Length: 177
Image (cartoon, rainbow, N blue to C red; front, side, top):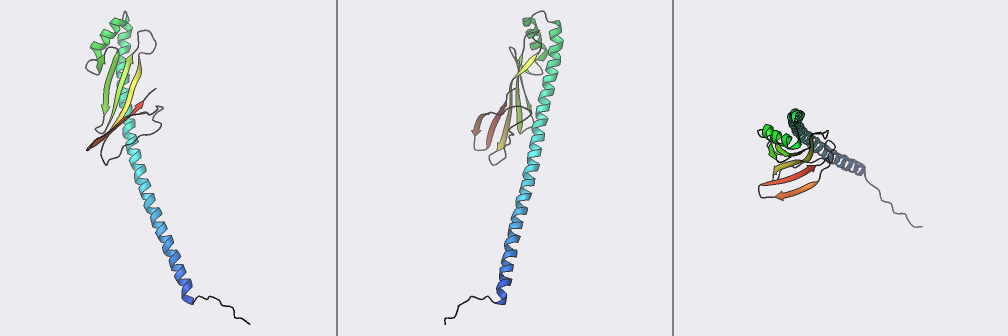
């Protein structure tokens, strides 16, 4: 009769297996912790950037409201569209750049800039201005961080240009109503 051969482990094999499993679980736990910390840092950075972008957008809207207030006063006294445009150019020349019926200005915080262009609409059209361009421009160091959200206050982003230089990069997202 043949003897069956069996493999038997000594009393230390179970301990070695347990040590290996505990070590593997500890390494996986540490990796998860590091990943969580990085996610928290990225989330905090995203919040900071979004707050800065929303603050710039609020400043742009406040500037538009000031321009609209001036235009509201001028439209009440304007006889025709030519007089209205001439009076608006004179009244707004210190606040914004005036080019015909277009008004432009920049709101910036040093890193990000929102370039704003409004079109003055004819007298009596109900609405005095409309957005032509509302572009967020982000300047960062080459190894820096550029941020854009897919849905910023109902505007759609369109990557308009990307210029990569040795010291600085620039990305531009255009908000169109």
